[in-house]
Every structure is written in structure tokens, then in C-alpha cells.
Image 1 (cartoon, rainbow, N blue to C red):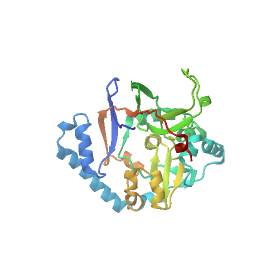
Image 2 (tube, one colour; image 1 turned 45 degrees about the vertical axis):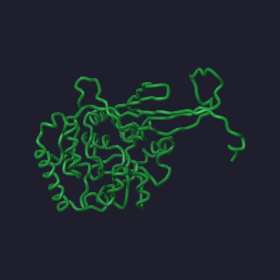
Image 3 (cartoon, rainbow, N blue to C red; image 1 turned 90 degrees about the vertical axis):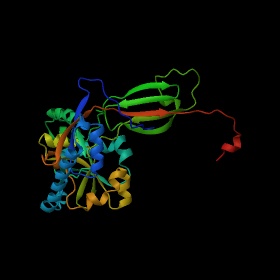
Image 4 (cartoon, rainbow, N blue to C red; image 1 turned 135 degrees about the vertical axis):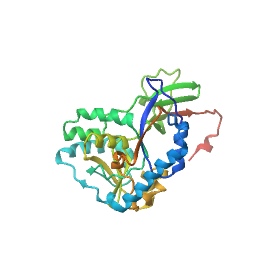
Amino acid sequence: MDARLQWSLDNDSGYIDELWLLGRPPLDRYLRYARDLIVNGVKTPRHVLADEWRAANDYYYDLEEKEPGFADQVAITELAPELQPLAEEVRRDARFRRAFDTLPSRFAMVELDRLMVSQSHVDLTHARRLQARLATVTSPEDLFRFCLPIDGDEAPVHMRRLGSKRFLFWSQSSDFRFHEAEAFRPDQISGHDAYGSVGQVLGLMVGYGSNFLNVVQSDNRLLLSNGHHRAYALREAGFTHVPCLITSVTRRDEFNLVASEETASNVAFYFKGPRPPVLKDFFDPKLRKILQVPRTLRAVEITFETKTFSVRDFELAD
């Protein structure tokens, strides 16, 4: 079960920088976050926080007048021929086949500035780590692999046994999650010395998502679904157009399959509003604010139970 717990890391400072987009509803969530997590947040008068949020919110109204339809003009172009083999390699990867097997999808070059964003903040510490890796990007192929990695470059996962049937897993990545339960044959498991003959194996798997730079397209707009930190790091490093995986939706039921519950409940705000938040807003001094917050971990706790009992053969028949 995903416990959504948070632990402070034992490191040099114990804090990270978060870059927030102010002016985005709801205001009360921002005020609670400032009070509970921002360093010295309880010492900052609430009216000061509300005033700066209100100024950003007013600025968004100005942008609706100055830049209506800004998100509708996002540039989408075909991949260069030399990148097509890399796209096919991603398509063959199990993470792609499991996560993108339902709706139409394609690879293309997309314009970063006009991508709509659903996250209100990014972890600058993580974004800077990603940006440091961009120093090794010297070709279109390198850029493709950065945007759509299949090399398993995720943060390490740690585990602690809390009891005979209770386990805790944690990671520095906010993408860490419970995957699924799956049955395995004994010959699919190696490195385990069983104290008896094993009949079946049940696996409870934790890990990460596909980690692909991915957007959802409806009409002429693109909404970042995964990869906010990656997109921010690319834009900060000077990239304007990058390879991306695009999933197309044409109706609300499809959008519910590929978006978070919160985003799906605000689909009209993103795809019908005159000027929704876009990636370039993270670089606008009138909208951005850097906050220092405690460094946290993402944790998943798994607890299971077993029962042994007798049952008649015919009661289990199909």
C-alpha cells in the first residue's frame, strides 16, 4: 500500500529548493504548504504570502488578454530519419508496451515553451542533477535518449523489514510507487535457497513509471503528463524543441486513462481556457518563487497476510 509518507534525508543540509508557480488555484493549498513545509514559513505573515500569490494571479489574467490561444500554437514536427530506429527501440521496450498500449501514440519533436503544465512546482535540486547530465548530450541521438531513456537511470530503492509480513521501501524519487502483484513460476526466480519445494511465487513489485517525456494531445494543445523536471532542465539548458512521446485523446473517457484524478477534473481549464500555465511560466520572474523545504523521501509500505485452510476440490472448480 502506498503510504505517501515523507522522511527527512540525513545529508549536508536536509533541504532542497523548490520552484513554485504562484497565482494558480487553490490559494489555501499554497498557504497550508507554506505554513507546514517552507523553512520559516510559520514566521512569514499569511497576508504577505497571499499578496504575492494574488499579484501572480492578476498577472495570469493579464496573460489571458495578451496571449490568448498561446498553447494552441505549439510547434510539432516529425522526428529526423536518423532518430526513427531509436523510437522503434523504445516501442519494443516493456515499459512502453505496458504503459502506452491503449491509446494512439507517436514520437515527434515538440516546442517546450508552449507545453501546458499541471504541476505547480518543480524540485530544483533534481532538475539541476538532470541538467548536469545534459553536458554529455552532443548529438540528436543523445538528446533523444535523455528525453526517452530506457537505460534504467532511476534513483536507488532501499528496503527495511518491519516485521515478518510488513516491509517498507523508499526512494528519493517522487515517481516511486507500487506497481502490481504478479504470480511467477519457481523457475523464474533465481538466487533464493528455499527450505522446501516451491510450488508458486507471488511477487509484490515497487518501482518507477516509464520515465519518458510524455504529453497528452487534444486538438492543438499538449499537456505535460510526465517529465516536468526533465522538460524544465532542457529549457534551462537552452533547448527549445525536443523529442517527446505524444498520446492522443479525443474524449473525456480517454483523458481519464492518462491523467491524474486532479488533472482530469480540470480538463476544461487546460484544453478550453484562453491561457493555461505553460512551461515558460517557470522562467517568468512575475510568476516564479523559489522556496526552501525539507528534503523528503517517497515511501511504499507493503503488508500481507496468509491463511491456511481445507477446501473441497469441487468448490474450487471453474
